[in-house]
Image (cartoon, rainbow over all chains, first blue to last red; front, side, top):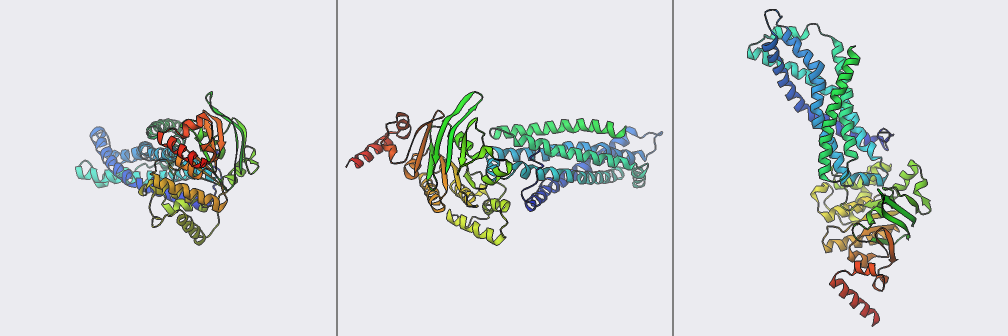
Length: 233
Length: 256
């Protein structure tokens, strides 16, 4: 870990790598994040309508429930679990393949700090893009509800909009953004570590990739528990 | 010149290198030969510092890499070029980006200077019209030649090649051998090649170190190898009926 955070050999190369990683890991994830969030926003809206609305409950609860579910858990935790699969396996298999094909050894021979060159831009990129993906996800999820609710006739646009603006607590957003920073760090570091130290061939790279998704997911859930307890106390 | 003194290395109690000493001279192609599993790759990786030895010294022109700090080791490694068995080119970079990579990382040259050096290195290894291709899009022989171009990009003092001919056809193997030999003489490099290709041994073996079961068994050159009485070496080098016949003919020619 100390080698990862050592001063880069050449800043210009690291900036170039960082931009490439932001594009590869972040921009290329926007599509899937948006699609899943739109559908989940719609599904949460329908589930809330069919399971929670009663004569005793105000109907704006649909928009409010959708908003808080998205902000508090879906767009931060569940989305991070999904990104652990997409980004995490990508990082583990890329670095693992470079290890077994001696590309990392080749960098070391040249005198390049391979840990820093390969891993640091990925960590910075994922930590930087996770909150942005969170914001995109919440926005898309809310739009998903806005389309699905009125289209299926379970809620009017005005009621839904009233719901998503009622009793808004900004702390929920700060809390989730803190979580996405932590989860982003886990999504990049755990797979990078497992990929960097892989030994063997293609089979071991596959195993490292699977292991990285499983370990990162468990750590995300554990830290979700810890952070919820710490920050909501 | 690279001098190795009493190098030993074991993995989980199994001795892989046992007390190996030798000198690899400047401007010569020094070959390490031996059967698969004899410890050749471990020896090569120990010399370049990818594997830490249990005991012994590796001196690069008198400098012991074990006594160097991180930055000194980094500077030494910039004097080393290495060609790996499969080329180890970076998959995500094109041919020209691969060759330019060490210059981008360690020099403050302008783009024009870097391009000029890049063109020189690629021309030197006879790579044309492939600058924009990725490693997956070129042949095995080309990958090896690009790896050589990358290894010489920073004018190294020491060149290491791990089985540069493996997986190549005989014609391409000879091209690679000739290229390494020419580059070694042209730039006065200390070259160490790990091989079990007998053509390479005969063609470019200025110095040959034969190791067996982790021990130094024999050292000499490609002329002396025909006259040696070392049984293990003879069994290894002249294993096939064809090579035995070749040896007999060669010795008959010498007698005449």
